[in-house]
Image (cartoon, rainbow, N blue to C red; front, top):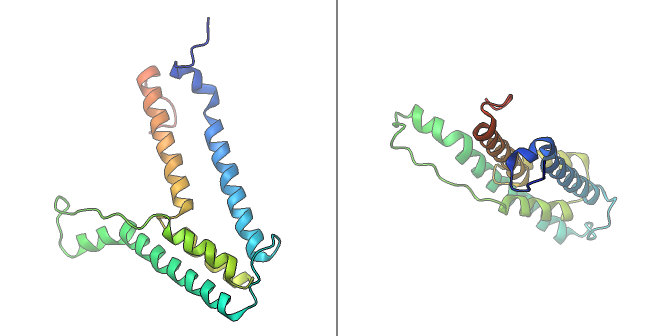
Length: 162
């Protein structure tokens, strides 16, 4: 039996590789943000008042964009339905991807390190559905759907794909 790199059945034993790499990137990104914010990794001198103001402004901008993305993703449709809107006439609207995460990253660099600030930054990052954590989650979900579709086409119904 020869190895055919285009045969999708050869990927069965290697499904864990993309998710392992994705997890490693996510852990490295979170570790870098923690390290920068807590001062383990040298960053900009955050003691000056002007830079602190810019940092909190960036965190505020990230919070507003994150709140908008959360509203558009999870709250807009249920509110529309509660107000009597019909399912067929509803139009989904995209949020603002990436901008909130960028603002939070700038804020993490400029805000003075403290545990409440770190908790606030992480909370906003989790709420921002257009941010990096949700992007990686969407990649993982999409990869699982594609893997299940490929396996279903080749082998019938695989376990864990329902």
